[in-house]
Structure formats: structure tokens, C-alpha cells
Image (tube, rainbow, N blue to C red; front, side, top):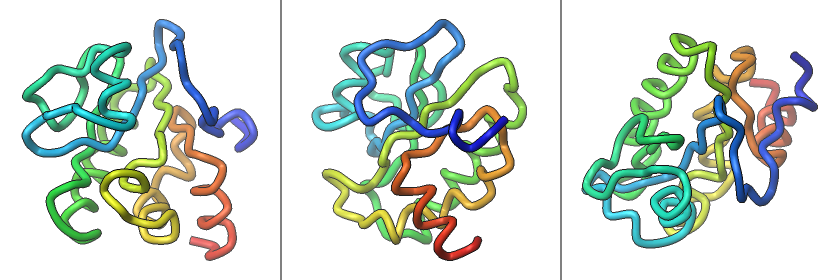
Length: 134
């Protein structure tokens, strides 16, 4: 699948049956703002669950430490996506809103997702990954 077919839309208001909204969360699963609130209100995120598949959403904790603490959760997500080819994952700009990280800090965590055809990334993540040739 071409990269062009794997760019997360800027605004997501609905999902196809097989699509999963991937959002930045916190370990407590308090989905009170940003993409987490959208995931809770529209895509089945479960209050109190901060990690993993929840309805048509998947939470990756970004509010509990630095990049080194987020990375294992991103790796866990990529492994999950590889194991669930029947689903198509739309990764939002996790960590780049309320959590306060930059795209340049977060995008490299997704370098292993480049060749996973059922993962879409935001355009600015692709830009960083292509610029850094990771």
C-alpha cells in the first residue's frame, strides 16, 4: 500500500467498521481532553483504561514521562497492529497536544510502523521520518 493511502486525515469525525482511532492517553484512562476526549465520546474509549484497544480506539499513554517511557507503548501498539491485519489504524498526533511533545520527538518512535501497511500516520510524522531517513 502506498504511503499516500496511509496518511491520517487531519480531522476524524467518523470511522469505517475496520478503522481504529489511535490517540494519546494517560495511564489512568482519564480521557478528559484533546483526542482522548474525542475517542471517549465517539469511538468507544473506556474511562479508566489508558492503554490498548477500546471500542474503535486504541490508547497510547503519553502523559507519564519522557520519550523513553512512551516508546514501549508505541512498540506494543505496532506489534498489536501487525497481529491484527484486519484492522486499519489511524494514528493521531499523539503526544503533540496536551502532553507537550513536538512532532520531531514523537514521530521517530513510529519508524517501525513505516512498513506496516495497516497503520496510517499524520503527514507531519511522515515528513519527519522521511527527512531523517529512519
